[in-house]
Length: 319
Image (tube, rainbow, N blue to C red):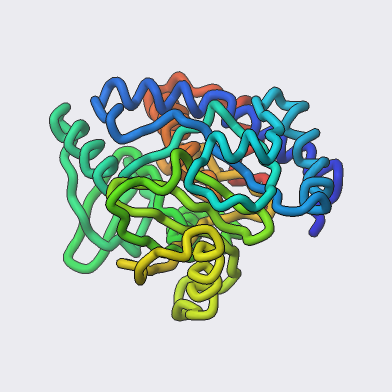
């Protein structure tokens, strides 16, 4: 609640805006290097406001984004219809972000990024790691049937990062915002870009051979089972736009690693420079992945700007 007060909101937005300003160029650089441009589309993103009151309530958000130089365009219902011909005529006005990119197949993108890394000599091993010990000459990781000693360790384990950071000596107030997903098979794309009906609180994103519907927020930790009522909510919501959809082909929930001030933790542990953090990106994990990778690589290479990373430091939470 304290982080939602005006001064804190402004400071947190300022910190995130600095990262977001470089997010697109960082992704474009990685896309070029890894040769995965075919999996990303720079076709914008659209918010739908189906009532005048919803649009009016969002005035503060529009003003905040405008103050940070975010390119956004208010659209009439006719302009919305021209952008998305398959949407039913709801009379909704829109807010369009023309610079936004989206991924057409996240799993394939991750696989090809791994392939690009291994082609450059990276060795990839998969194991569950639950032990971390900082030693004088490095960091020791352990798990079931797994042991490794490293000079430097990057903790980028999403919602699972809290326990590892604790072993490294940092108490991080990480919580999980559980988000729910449905996917519907489609023979042809139903939308040209991600579309968010703001009153329903989810995104409809066209992907290769399917439409993904994802959203809502649930503070439920890592262990609780999925709530079928939230999946049903998504299903009812998307059918307001596309009643012809068949049954979903997959459904699941994911764990957004989130912090009270909405900023990620990027930078060294306060106990040892041999442990570097890169987690807690909340709803912006994929968006900020490439710029975070660049910042972490710079730290490892000894050319990182510690002052720039101060807003994301682990010690900002105190003891």
